[in-house]
Image (tube, rainbow, N blue to C red):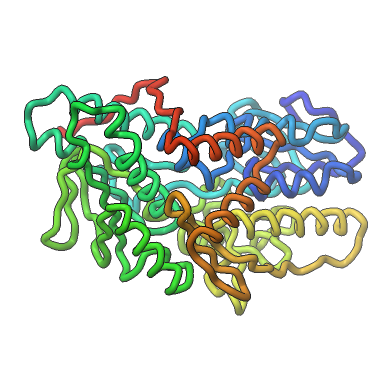
Length: 430
């Protein structure tokens, strides 16, 4: 049964929910095989999430880090894409319910990724800013620029400081990279754009709940990144947890508090789970689905999960693999091979994660890179970071556009995409 205008086929139907790193890697593996692949996503594009912070800070236009899903898998006769939101999985009937109808499957792959985790704090969720999607990044870009426009107009020094005070919660790669980008805007762009505003009063605060930033990386990377940020003028606060935010006032678990019109929440993610697979016994910490070494969701032979939404517990990774692009891509490729093996009645291949390292950039000529064999920081690390990100971007045009933008921004000390295309109305404190 299908109401999505997808033809019946003698090939088994594999439905993939989510066009992120894992879903795309899997679909690419399957598209030339004897299976019918249906990819469902609520956006018609794949987002290169590691560069979202550059959209938020005017370094890149959003279309240079997005790529049409249909174009990724163009020309494959057994591939179908549907723009839809999956509402429920019905495992008993092997069927999906979506906002455009129902569709049955032979094999189902959940690759829905993750979403921002506000840990139940509704105030922060409604009044803070997240940066997990392109629309959210554009909202943040507009808000940052609107705040400076507003700061020009007010005579109240207290209000002006709050408008130019940025609080970033979470010292992982997202928080660190955003803080570095904002610091560079403060240093190189604001004085030119707003000569009649004392932009030296602008503050960037990075708040981390544990005793070091970039906790998933090596201690030397954390130390170096902190040094880079402090040299850029970022205030790094450690061992402080943000408890609440009313739209202006940031309260913490210590005596330290902040007056800020902009709070960016980068302090955690949780799996984006779907109704029908949300039974307590299936879920791990952070709402991830428990899977075996072949990516099968516990208790189901025909349902699989990969990427951020899946938790495969191994000796090396007792809490599952890191919620990053690399594990998702490797899992997608491995599952692609395994689905072909299932169809051909061959034994399955257990997943083994090859850790290729992690990296973060802190601004111009400053980055930290941890590779399995060695670690380095500074200018060379920055070039490696740029090369790796260009390599993994989908689409030749996107690579060229991003590269040209980076070269231009580097030479000119500029970020020309600082445009309020779509004004953002912030929910104010009640």
